[in-house]
Image 1 (cartoon, chains in turn green, purple):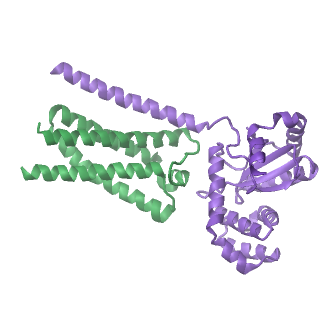
Image 2 (image 1 turned 180 degrees about the vertical axis):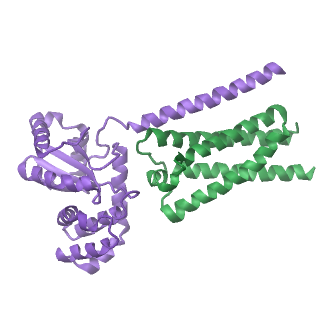
Image 3 (image 1 turned 60 degrees about the vertical axis):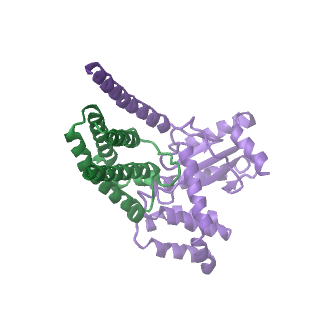
Amino acid sequence: MAKNERLFGAASAILSFIGFLDAAYLTAKHYIGGALPCLITSGCDTVTTSAYSALFGIPIALFGALYYLSVFIAAIVLLDSGSRFARYYIFLATPFGFLVSLWLIYLQAFVLNAFCSYCLLSAATSTLLFILSLLWRRNLARK
Amino acid sequence: MNGKRITLWLIVILLVGGAIWGVMRAAKNSASTGTGDLAVAVSETDWKTGSANPKVVLVEYADFECPACAAYHPVVKQMVAEFPNDLQFVYRHFPLKQIHQHAELAAVVAEAAGKQGKFWEMHDILMTRQSEWAGNRTAQGFFVGYIQSLGLDLDKFKADLADREIKKKISDSYNSGVRSGVQGTPTFFLNGERLVSNPRNPEEFRTLIKAAIAGGATSTPATTMATSSVTR
């Protein structure tokens, strides 16, 4: 495996793991309940209890956790075996994750007028993952 | 090679499993925040009524648009009237914005009335006439009526409505509630200790307050003592 690919794989694994921790925490909060202590911004529970926090009764955070977990596992598979399928999966999944994040940021900024620090962290990791996959694609195309 | 692979996947499984376990624990811990004590002690910026030199301080976190808060309003008033020398009542905002569309505005209205010395008067009106304006699209019209009925200066009032300090005070109050483990309204704290279940009638409330008075100064939590020395 090329050194670059190993680097991209490792960076994706780390970012998606951070995203997974964040989304899993929000999912756990959703089911366990209780007020969400906010770190920097205010309005965490405004956001996480809003009508937009769940889709078909399943919390958005759970979708997020599964998304990050799948990217994490794909990154590990790639590091382990250099599988092309794992790479394609990351290329396909990260733009989708990025778009969903954009939509959620839009909801927080213009509909709910409240930001939730955990959701912003998730937006940051999904944006970085997307940028990383773009750079990686360019790097591959150059060869 | 195979052994290396197994190790890698074992590490991954342990990492993910450990993460899920840790996250569940963290979520559970913060769900039962603290010991149920009031995290932010009563201070000069709080709205207080009743005894100026109390043996017992009752703090309520409430939302003007919450029906249960309106139901408790006459009971709390009755308690304040019954223990004029021993009981002080403190009102803190806990607007549940996500379910009550006018909760925050109502809190701002009360604070702006407070700037003209009529906080408690407005507090009483908002609570007793909640059914008029709660969930009503024309709530603002009712608020203007209340302002006029209290004889407040409407221009000054309008200017105060946009006051950032008021917004900050309300969100500070909300956050102090979150830190004290408030999850719904109304939540009462008697001498800094959260009432696990709200008293169901005036009789139960009276018993609790009497017990707290009898408990006297010795049971006054350190938090309340600390502020009195800081703020005075």
